[in-house]
Image (cartoon, one colour):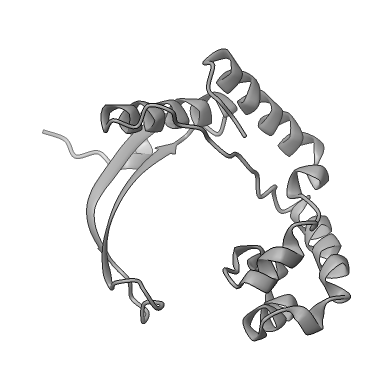
Length: 161
């Protein structure tokens, strides 16, 4: 029997995982070091069709668990070409309100302004409501990919917010 490496097998390759995971760093307040997670990975196919397949599988699993009215919120982080322009827009947007951001977000402003969008502090959440949307700054390739994904999901009649 010959042994094959994954990179020599035909694409796409699809994998799933499920089970207990462990946080390496100290957990945040209200979180535990151990948690359970499921995930899916698809390698060798970067098409929006594959993204739609993964979302379809997720929807199916959630429905099997008894969740009937499932909606999805989709976003994009862009690519190395379009993300810098979006980061600049975020820096411009948050520059006028640094005094209202929490200490973590003040630090994030200088290190990685995208992380401000993850903050759970109420005043930061309130401030970012009017922040520029990444989907308004996607390059042509990312825009085409994102719009194609939305089209596939529309064909599947998936509710998207």
